[in-house]
Image (cartoon, rainbow, N blue to C red; front, side):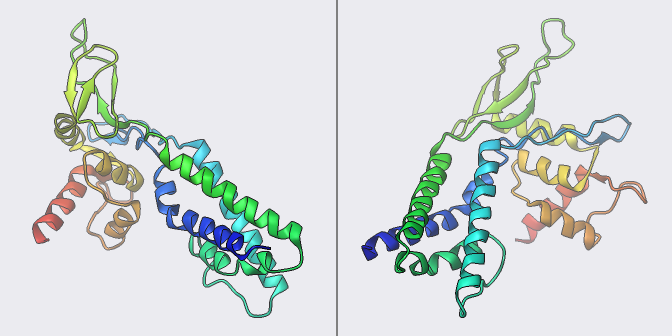
Length: 246
């Protein structure tokens, strides 16, 4: 077996591992509608954040294969154990032992290993090269034909700073929508997950884990004692203070 083919398979696996975070970022492409939660005055709905099913399936298929390959290495060698069971580090550890398949006598196993690595590196590359789906930037601010308000939902494509509402044709800018959303959500009560989602929509790259830590450290406190709902305005205040401190 040509050793360069084995190196190519290793590099394919390392490519997947290097782009694992990028692939996960494509899982929830537009961020979903974060104008959920409850208004302080009452009402509200639970909402949801749609995922890219193709990317979700791809992530699961790769992780399942990485775990299977890891079990093979543990069963068939005496000197290998993964540093961690978490992806993508697990895949990196498997990739470094590519010779277990490509330098052995089992040509069928070697071909299967190399074919899988090449195929899935290609799938990851194509998934990442697809144009990013448009990002949700909130409801249209237009008044509508009857003055009661437009029912349109606005999205902005990657690299653009605005667009037109598909319902009423009103033009909008990303910056204007961010300001509008921040005002609209000031008095809303949201779950921790909804707060992280809403912060991202208004331009703050805050992870859900960070919001959980705020709650754990009592930087962000429930709006009503005993309830797991928090004021979005309080979360915005934490972000603003951190920016001033930085």
